[in-house]
Length: 168
Image: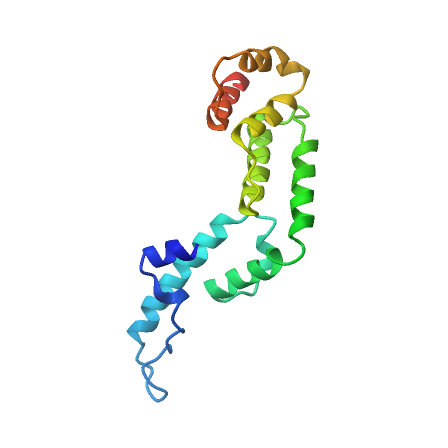
């Protein structure tokens, strides 16, 4: 994240917040503050868009992007990381299609895989494809067998498209 911010020359991450007004006696806006606020809100929206909805309530009250980020670090860079990792692996292993919308099922699997990747434990593409296919259920068995019999490995994105086409 910090590399991206630096690449876009967004300085809010590295510099202190400027004062909102040019001086204490004047209400003339500080142009540096206006730029800082715009960049801060941009980074804040990047972070918010990058986390799952279940995490957002933990970030309430963070007034700046840096505060938002610091709350994430405190919550997820602590000793709870192994517990989160274990919980996510269990979610992936116990995930089943259960006649739900196929798109929802595949997105849930992808979401879990993305969270594991964010914890520096990415699921290899082949394993993710295997997890999704194995838990589709008997109604999809002929379809999964045809995919598994292919000579070439299939990417998760291709599998997602194929499943959406099959479900429609």
